[in-house]
Amino acid sequence: MKTIQLIEFLSTSSDLSDVLSDEEVIAFAPNLGLETVSADTVLRKEGEPDCSLLIVVSGEVRLSHDGNEITKLHPGQIFGEGVFSEDGTSFEQATCTVDSVVARLALKNFEKFLQTDAKAAQKLKEHYTNLHHQRLHEVEGLSFRDQRKFLALVAHNEMKPSLMEFAKSHQDKLRRFHLIATGTTGIKLYQETGLMLSKKVASGPLGGDQAIGKMISESSILGMIFFRDPLSAHPHHADIEALGRLCDVYQVPFATNPGGAAAILNHLLVDHPEEAVIPNRVLEHYRNQQKKVVSAP
Image 1 (cartoon, rainbow, N blue to C red):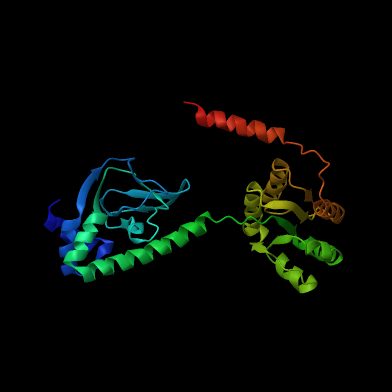
Image 2 (image 1 turned 135 degrees about the vertical axis):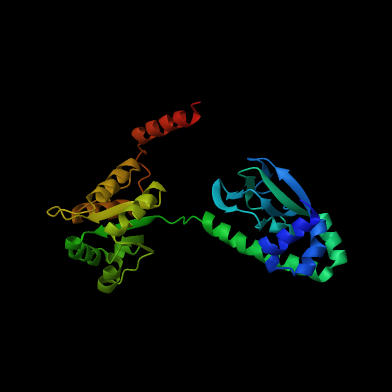
């Protein structure tokens, strides 16, 4: 790509056009080096110093953090803005997903640009420094994990009055937990008992059961109280059964009636150092089998 073609691309098809004027792009372009990069090439590893601002000219670049994809960048998009920050450390890995061409502004070339057009260079630095901080906050949000352990309170509509009665008679104990509930259960709990939820998810049939199931798999649920109506059919019966199955998989105490719920509260509120932890042999066997599947050629 000739310089004149690069200038036209930067002025009309890149994010740079939102930062620099056409005249400033003309002064900026000669400071860029073009590189042809093959697919699967890692342009920058997570945690490495950000030494260059890079512009995708053609192809595609994937940004990932902690093994999770953040986004895919296409022609005209820019990354490596940490080069202008004080820490100068990359929080994302950049990998070409296909054969690509990138334009690189090395730090030494930015210093040359600063000498030839200080106003444009400062404008560029300020914009991408702010963008770096914005992206950093976004990544921190994605990687944030709530370390709290929740007690789940769920009830079918016909059983909500029973759950309210149970909550009223066990308020002091329930207040000692981070509570999570589905749908209207949390509102009714607050209205009738004054208990406040630490987290609320959608109604069970609308995905709340699955949301709690995900938390069980992440070891975020320390106990499940699910007052089920045993005399009525439910359209989301499969989700209800899945919750019970996950509690068995991850050995989470699971109660479906007031007697069992009271026992769970008493158990969770007392340390049991004398009790040996009984490992879940079925889960261990399954995980070992999955490791073999992954490692198989």
